[in-house]
Image 1 (cartoon, helix red, strand yellow):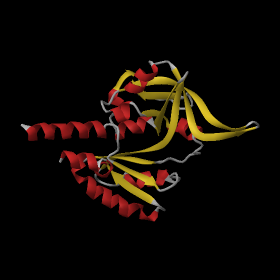
Image 2: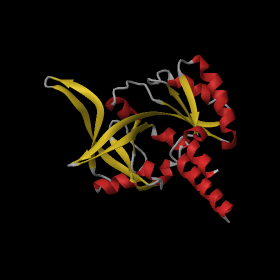
Image 3: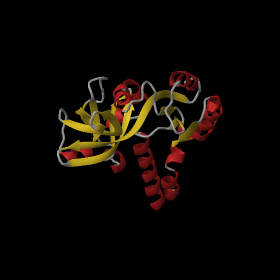
Image 4: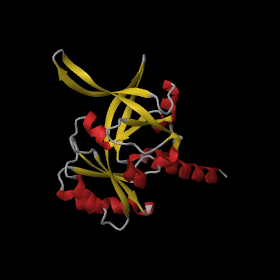
Length: 226
């Protein structure tokens, strides 16, 4: 009975994590990824790779009145993101489809409860990067409209992750056309380590690229269950 419960728990945990996290990620050490379109095309040639999507990762602060909360801001292309994660199926209110230049945002259910937000409300996103002005350095601030509220069932994501359109993220965080990395969806998760190793050999020609997968990112958690 105990073994059955733990196996069920492991499967449920894996499903929840992979609905938001990537099967495999390709990132550049210490900087942003520039020539990512060429790399994306190279990765899509692998047999076990189902889809590839660019993303940005930045830290910022949500602010509404006297309430503030630090969050991880992920910039996505909605049409591609839905191919590498199941987050679009976790939307409990509103829509997943973000429109670029409209400054729309998807927030977790715990963030919505904390600020008392619902779809259509507005909240300020404050970047840790500063803008220079005649009065000195000022934080970069932009108001976003709540497009949707998701609920994964894991506090780490529901309380600390927000999603905005990739173009809006590149503008807000001054990334030009660069991205933080590429998210990869696999056809067969049992071949994660093998595919990860093959990708590592392929990206050697690109400078300072690192390949990481879900088995390494959450190794301690799954090792404890095991």
